[in-house]
Image 1 (tube, rainbow, N blue to C red):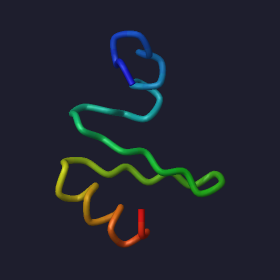
Image 2 (cartoon, helix red, strand yellow):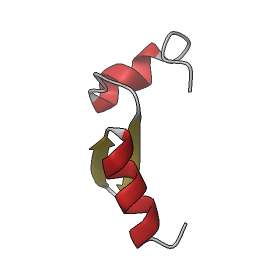
Image 3 (tube, helix red, strand yellow):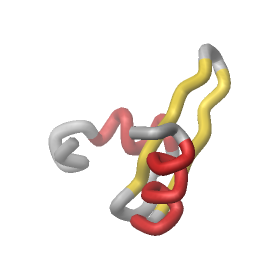
Length: 47
């Protein structure tokens, strides 16, 4: 997403760098930052 167009979401989730992946599990929110961490998560989820 374009962080300049969605500043309210950036603030809500505390996004400070790109890339950042936000994963919601119901009310629980997991924040993954940097490409290698996101890749490991995607691989573990068979995405």
